[in-house]
Length: 377
Image (cartoon, rainbow, N blue to C red; front, side):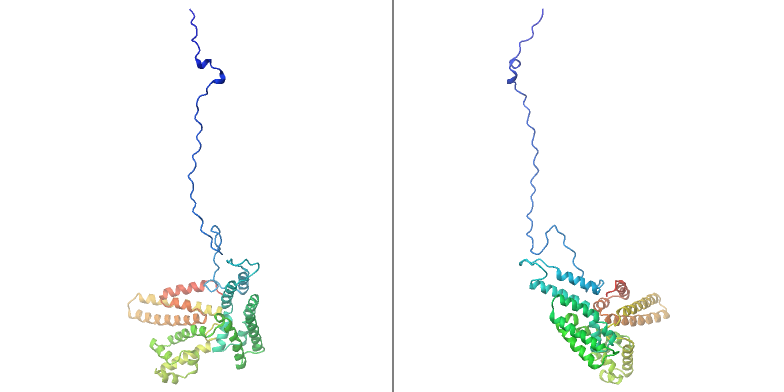
């Protein structure tokens, strides 16, 4: 018996158009990332670059321990300074410097550059006012003065340009066919130089520079005289013997009478200052800074050897070692005082101040670093 197939179900007999597709859940939408909270950017400061722009490195000051710029590089740096147009909150500018603030800033840069640029001029006139300077040394100041004149012209500093022209003309007249300057030429040059002091005191002043150097030189020279103590120096300074020319012009008898020190010690002091003035080409300035640094280098080597002798003698306790230690200490101190004179003549008062509290080993290391650094020109 053949079995009949079961009857079709309703779903099977429904038309194809009415078939219900299986329910498929819709694809899940991606979960949105959490919103990033962005802090509001700080309001830009007027005149400063955007936050994402790295700031340029600050320019190296020309008065620092780094190599001093040469004449042509000083001119280039000054050209860049006066052509920069700093951003300000004021109206837009089209060319160069136009506001009072900009002019004051550039004038400040000019004064700083001038103070470095005329170092040799200042040293020559310092010597001329308080001592003597030959014609060749004075004539050597002309290139620096003429270069400064060009910079002053760019800023349209008419008064300074005129003063520089007058002084250069005075230099040319004073040194023409002369080996030494007479009193008339000397006074005339100093008169013309005074106008430069009035216009830029920081660059051309002489009295303050003399006061920074001369007491150091005098004290260092006195410390090299056997028998001079701190109280001796204080006594001499208190009675007005605090200038080089006073020691050179005074006799041993005069110094002994007014100070109360022995005639023998006064004689040794006069001999020391006479020897210094005869041997030095200039009293308070280094006529040849390169030669002065070579001399300083020789003194440093000498002091290093003397310090080694002192340290070696200090490690022993014999009577001979004690005597050698005493002698090494004396010689080392005298050499250090000669180093102080050389540094004062080079105008290195700040370096002298840093040396004073140090041990001799530390002084030697600091002086070695100073002399090893690129020479300022």
